[in-house]
Structure formats: structure tokens, C-alpha cells
Image (spheres, rainbow, N blue to C red):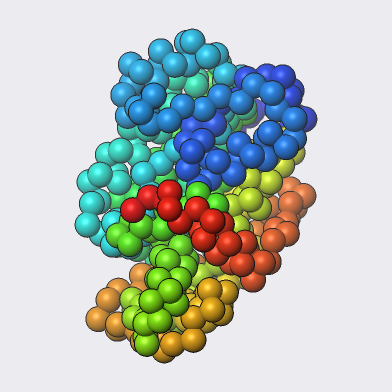
Length: 324
């Protein structure tokens, strides 16, 4: 794929203003930490109370005031199977508006480098495994999160269109399943790994004899610690340019059952685990091909066991202030 953009990736100016949209969330907070560690001195962020990214006038006024040179678009309405299945309109409408407003404002104000972050759910439900970037738009989506996926696909195409029409060296990255500090551990809005951490922690604390998880436990998932993703994002901003979205993951997967066993061990739960097979499993397998990412010079560093242990520790330290 070619789009005629002529740009040589290079180290970003540490004094330039860089806006991290969604800086308080799981992804945005990790990226902010990574940028701070790398010496960036002008990182800009706004909470949703300070700036509603769904409001076009507010977003354009913010860009006119702050004039960021670089942008990382990590803001999104996110959730697990239950939330996506229950509120598809919200996931489609909110994410489309966030993307359109931020991307349009960034273009009008000549943002030099922009990284749009999507999700591996953009790929077809039954894509060949591991999933290569060219699998995009080649089959039907997983119906439990198709509205969210369509919004993210629109974001990828928006970035590609900006490259073609305006010649700006913007890029997109599609992370696999993420977890880590500042995740959503709420019972009804979380993804599988943080949901399991909370469930097993509470079971251990109450000495519950058993835990019941959704589905069969057989689907295979790939998990990436969010600090690894943040490191990959900075690397891509400084070393990659191209119109095609890049997969970001570990290149390995495990079953949900294996994740449950690992989390139970990490929190010290010794009771039984049951599986409610009347609940949906979602996609049977979702493993990303990360060979393009490797060619761009980056591979993951945090092992799944280490990442789970770190996340459990963070959860226990912050349990009183978590989203409910």
C-alpha cells in the first residue's frame, strides 16, 4: 500500500507540545508515563469533565488554544462483551464523534505526527490465525462488538485518507487485549482479565467455595501489558511511517481457562472454578501477527505472569478508588 507521503521518522522534539487524548484511561495514562520517562516536557491532557471530545466546538477550541505538534488519540468508549452487546449505539456514536472531532481538529491545526489507536476487534471473527494486517475488511465481524469495531475501522480509514489528501504522516496501531494499571475493574464494564482479577480477589477475600466465569473457557486470547503498548507507541512515532495499521501484541495466546488459573494463583484463591456455558464466548481465537511490528524494530518485554502479578498488586493498592 502506498499513499505518496514522504516522511522520514525521527526522534520527536522533547520540548514540543504533545496531546494525549484519554490521558486518564488505561492506555492514555500508560502513554503519558512513558512520555514523561522519555523526557517530554509539554504533555497536554484533559479529563472528560474538562473537555468533552464528543463536542466538536470544544475540541476545535482546545486545539486552537494548545496548538499541539503531536497527538496520540487514545480516548475511546470501551468495554467488554456485556457492555458492547448492551449499548452498541453508544459505542458506535461516541467513538465516531470522538474520532471525527479530534482528527478533523488535528488536521485543521496542522498536527505533524498523530497516532490513532484502535483495537484488534477490527478484524473478521473468523480471520486466519495469527491475524495479519491485510485481513482488515475481508469478512464478518464478531457481532458482540461490531459497532465498536466499525467505529475503529472508520478511524483507520480516516487516517489513511488524511495521508492521501493532505500528505500528513499520521499512523495507526491496533493493540491486542490490554491490561494493567488504571484498567476498568467494574463488574459490568470491564474486559475479561481485569474482571477475573476482581472476581477472584473478592472470592479469596470472602473465602467463597467457588467462582463462576462466563463461557466455556476455551477461547484463546492474546494479552499485552499496557506499559509495553506505551513503549511500542513511542517507538512507532519515532521509527515507523506508513498508511497501513500496525498490529501491536506479543504474538502468543492462551485460553481464558489458563488466564483464570493464573489469576487465581496470583490472588491466592484455592476454591473451585465453574463455567457458565450459557453465556457467550465471543471470538474463538484472536491472535495478532506481529511480524510487521518486529520489522519496525519493536517486540514485547513484559511476560504474562509478570504482568498479571503487577496488575494484581496495583489493584490491591488502589481498590478503594477504583471505578465501580
